[in-house]
Amino acid sequence: MNKLRSIEHIIAPPPAHMVGDGFRVHNFFPGNGLMALDRMSPFFLLDYGSKIEFSPSDKPRGVGVHPHRGFETVTIAYHGKVAHHDSTGNSGIIGEGDVQWMTAASGILHKEYHEAQWSKIGGEFQMVQLWVNLPAKFKMSKPKYQPIRREEFGKVILPENKGVLEIIAGNFNATTGPATSFTPIEMYNARVKKGAKLHFSFPENYNTGFVIIEGSVIVNEQQAKTDHFVLFANDGTDIYVEATQDAIVLILSGEPIEEPIVPYGPFVMNSKKEIVDAYDDWNNGKFGYLED
Ligand code: MN
Image (spheres, rainbow, N blue to C red):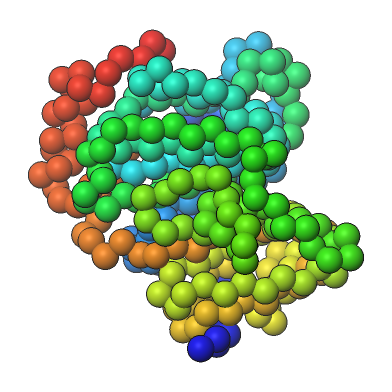
């Protein structure tokens, strides 16, 4: 049965903090004080880099070598370019509109910097980084890397030239996204014109939230503005969106992972013991090597 989902919170961007010297982010969760650790499971963390102007720099800004274990990092670049290198030998450039879906799983080291040529010129920078949790049975699986260019997304063209729904993961009607995930995830970008209307229906137990990247939309009769996060209650299925300006909305919905979450620093595990093991393995060089 279809039933309207209510809105639990519309969250204004919390005060920003820097990750390294290249990423100025608003942490919508888990650190906002409003949401339990598992409230958006399987999404564990959402860092949103709202639009900022970076001055030209010959030395690319960013964050140096650091480890991850137990989850996936998904980076979506809206403006600017990010270069990535990791200890499994994968590297790539996340260009404007592209997505990088990196499975840390059993452990990687990586570094994330503004792309060198982009850095020299500088300009507008806007991005999202999500941490997507993995269920216990996949936490120690092999690391994996999916660079996904915007052209590869599934595309649903809206009627009357009102924009496009880009399917990154999951599927909308018969259109499927290219990213593979370990648990069911729907991830779309709606890039729409003023007046566009969209209708989504996700299973009631799927945790669901929108990031308003640009513009302004009415969601289930409430106005949501640029840089806000809309958290939906799990009391229905259906969501109606109407753009009151040209807008970009990141749509996230996923089946919760019903397991304990023990996060510490760059690790997200199921128990304290596994956190201790992660630090031991990292200190003993089991995450490989990556030059700074
Ligand atoms: Mn990282």
